[in-house]
Image (cartoon, rainbow, N blue to C red):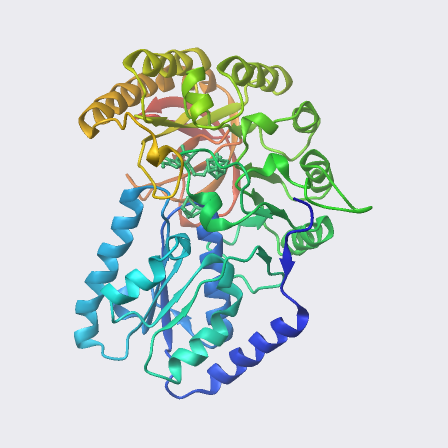
Length: 467
Ligand code: SAH
Ligand code: SF4
Ligand code: F3S
């Protein structure tokens, strides 16, 4: 699969820059924007790029969507409920338009990239001005310019494995930043739509990533989150001298002065010993790992096309724990995959019991049109899946209370994200192991790394005192 990525040329970037300048001068352009984001960190980061471009066009952010002249829905389609939520909100905006006639509405993101979806949406929701896929993000200035100069809807959806460098980014947080290292996915897990809507795996050039990391370091970020659907296969599609594995890329980044490095997501089949060693010997890579297992049963894993067995997964977990003692572990689990029997579900329950995760995201299987699993026999009724997921959640919550006890009395360092939801005299953030921690504090602490000692566990959150 080497060399499938298409780089956006400098000439094309300059063309888009010209549209940005033109829009800034247009009297009829929107003055404020609001981006509504669904889905994963990839989408969150895309929204930061959308905001970055809009700010360059002279727009400013409206904190609520009712007050914005331009509302952008960045959609996700990984599960049915994500899709329904996005469309429900789009319909609601139609009402807002009655009192705000110049309101501009765009729908973009993964859902638009589904075959036939853009046409379907535009037919059903005629008031949408712009629809564009994930591969067309860098052309937003041009699309907006066209939309502002006509009364037709503008649609752009191409299936192209593009890499667009140099887009402006307006970060959600000043202290922490996303850094994409690769786009797309080649794994085609049988339940998953992501490879169809995000295209083939393509790695950014190491020098582009390192340059961006240096810029972030200079701007004083405390934490970077490396992004990719499967970061462990970073570099496999690169050619030539500068080629790098994910483990080597991590070593390079670890050599810089950014205090915290995290990454998402890892596929267990590609979790190499080299990567585990890189983590073990690191200064800045946080002792945490998100390792989606999906199921604890071999037959289900095979039909999910995951390319590992339960035993191989457990082996990776023990190697990680040996190399990085106390590492924070989290996972994703799907229940009710087609054909899943009670006994096979029990294998998942037993695996959760055996691993003892610090956190688990649990999902009811949702059939996605075009994926292999959607056409499989033995689709599980919702009533069965919801009952299973309830049992799984209960088990995980019970176990989590116990795993968290290992932090009691320990020192931690917390990057404060905001005031605690329960009190305005407390702040919360993430510790080095990826677990949420709450401690006494105030607004000024946001964005700082604060040393503390864990004293208590309350509602699956760690409570700490400052030291
Ligand atoms: N690339 C990441 C996952 C991206 S999707 C990885 O491989 O880990 C995030 C999670 O959504 C997946 O791990 C899976 O647990 C869940 N998911 C994906 N497709 C799903 C579907 N059709 N139904 C239910 N859950 C799904
Ligand atoms: Fe989906 Fe699997 Fe790719 Fe993750 S690795 S994005 S679950 S196909
Ligand atoms: Fe959703 Fe797209 Fe992410 S489908 S989970 S937003 S890659």
